[in-house]
Length: 163
Image (tube, rainbow, N blue to C red; front, side, top):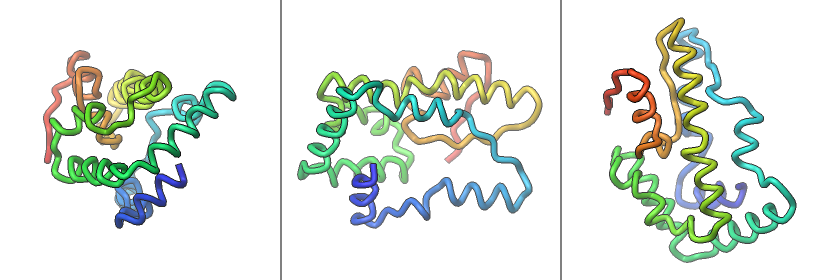
């Protein structure tokens, strides 16, 4: 992951200036609580390998992905889709990212993106029962039939895009 962040920095993308930092500062300035939609354990379960063999495979495949010449272009395209709000391109991410080619990559992607959405929807619904909610999530959680907007709409929430 550190190597991926380093690659992003070479392209002018710095996590320090990311949305998370901006949103945290705004919420603190407005004295609004910041509440996680997931536990640390839930995130670690999605991010970390389940055993040594899977860990070795994930490291090997991640390093190979970073060495591919098109890796920088993939990150640039993802960033551009996020910046412009191109939901169609974000929804097709798995088709063009060249990052879901092996069984390990497909399982990891499913775990990281769609696999976490039901838990986040549960948290949003629980929080919404007692207060208004502003939920900030990664862009890939917002697209597709298993994306947060679709899951929230299925539970009766009125979902509208603000851009």
